[in-house]
Picture 1 (cartoon, one colour):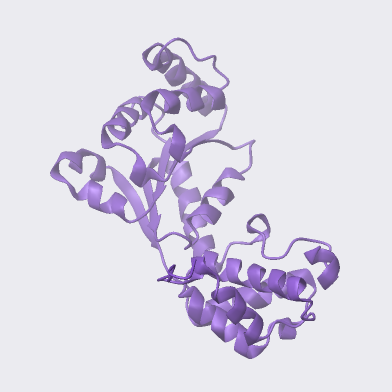
Picture 2 (cartoon, one colour):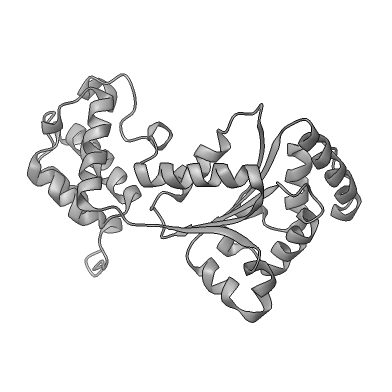
Length: 267
């Protein structure tokens, strides 16, 4: 409905359609270099600051040159991690992780000889128990030296690695970066670039609406994207025309999930 209302051929402010912002592209390019050399990389930051976008960009690396295995938050046990590696390497998982380790190492060297770069991504790595990460690191030490392990998570991951017991992991980090909040100007450029992609005028969002979105997003790209989309949906609901003004954005911001404190006495 939103597409017909605004005369669009594509969904607005959709995550899959967002191009890397300049600082995200720089992180992506650096990680690609490390993929060629091997190592342990950390990408940490607040929720909504672009970690998922960077992860998706890595998953789209050319398949002819890369083999990328991604372990999601719900699969952080060592056994599940080995299962995902087996799936990526097209190896049948046997009854235990231990029985598969040797096959994984052999296949890793075979793929490496064929010219493929091996990349393992642990998403939401701050939720992974360090003991499981330590087991994974020991396995990957037997992989080709140019294998790359990338840990993506919130800043709590850095605190965990600072503990004395985890210094053996931290000492092997070859690159780390914190995804930062966007400046007001970068946020404004993001909104305008997305409107350009959709074929909509920058005036689709009035200057007041744009500034309110930027201020409310507080430098977090995900919040900015969600606010823009929600404002467009609110305009459709209220038949408020094809221009998003400050009143439309304010109605969105009155929804409970946008407020830091919610008074439930009247509910």
